Structure formats: structure tokens, C-alpha cells
Length: 255
Image (cartoon, rainbow, N blue to C red; front, side):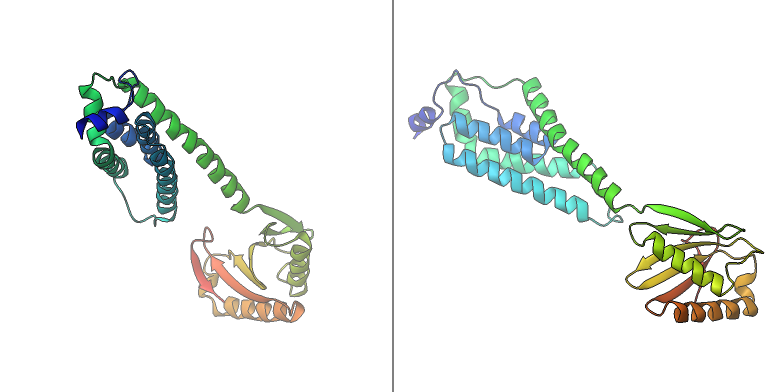
């Protein structure tokens, strides 16, 4: 059995990666690096079918790991070293189970191993090659999904509507302003500021009123009346009024 193993390693002059190097490289570079080192050894051993299978498993494992990290809830904290350690442990186990005897026979025959700096450079290079496209893609996705707020002013007092141009058009904002003017919420005495979000056919109107208005029944009754009038003026839409203090995250009342 021993001569057959030595024969599979081809020539001792060809360098391979030791089990410790595979562990170390997988810790630095993740599943993709583990796949590279294992596949490189399989190639040196003349096991071409395992080279292809190893790359397939490495790519799938990398994709699964990225998906898990992406969808992991923010309230779950994972130690920074846990995933690299698990990856390295798995790679070391696989190397021992699938290449252990070949690596030992190769060393016994006088074969040499790749230097540690080679392992480190390849691991870091593969990590960067994977990391840069992911970061770039995430940045592009964020820029596409991020709100694009703009504001339009109306009337002599510059009543203002702020809205996301990805959710609603300028024409819709103008129609809302006209309805607000019809109800006299937008007028020439005071400057009003509203933030509008759109969800389907529903307009969510964020208002910041004068201090104490939210506890004033007359103010709340007036807003209910304005909301009812807005619904009549724009019957294809429903309205939700949110009274806020200092920002949309601090809602005091909802009408």
C-alpha cells in the first residue's frame, strides 16, 4: 500500500502544502483558500477528479457563508475569530482525511513543501479578490436602495414637502401640496414642513407641530378634519398622519 501512495505523489521535486499550511491558509483566507490549497495538493497527487470537486465545494461553501453572514440578524453577535477557526478546523480535518497519507508519504520521499509566506500571500490575495467585489456590490446595492429625498416649496411662505423621488413623482408632490392648500394647512401665514413616505396607495405624512399641540384636543381634531378632506380631494389614496418630535423615529401620535 505504501508504494502506491508514493507513486500517486508523482515526483518529490514538486512542492505541496502541508496540513499545517492548509490550516493556516484557511484561517486567513476562508473556504476559498482552503479549496485552493486542497485542490493544489490533489493536482500534485494526480487526482484530477478531486480537484474539480474540491473547487465546487469551496465555491458553494463560500456562497453559503456569505449568505449566512448577510442574513444574520444584527442582534446576534459572533466573535470575530469564530468563523476563521471553524473554517481552519474543517479544512485541517478534510486535509487529514483525504490527503493525510499522501502528504506523509511525500515528505518521507524527500518532497518539499511551500513556504509559509507563499501560503499567506495566496490566502490574503484570494480574500482580497473576494472581498473587493462584495464590498463594491454592497455599496452599489445600498446606493440603489437608499432613499433619494428632495424638497419642494410652495406658496409665498415656502411651505415644504420632502419626499423620496424613488417612491413618488414631483407631480404627486404637487398634487399633495394643492390638497394641503385647499384644506388651508398650507397657507400664507405660517410655513409648514412635512415629510411624505409612500407605501402602495397610502401616503404617510410626518408633521412636526408646535410644542404642546399633540396634547391639545383642538389641534388633533383639526388634523382629523384635514385628513378627511385630503381623502376626499385625493380619493385614490389613503392617508396616515404621524405627529413627530425631532425626527421620524420619535412619533408622538398617529392619526
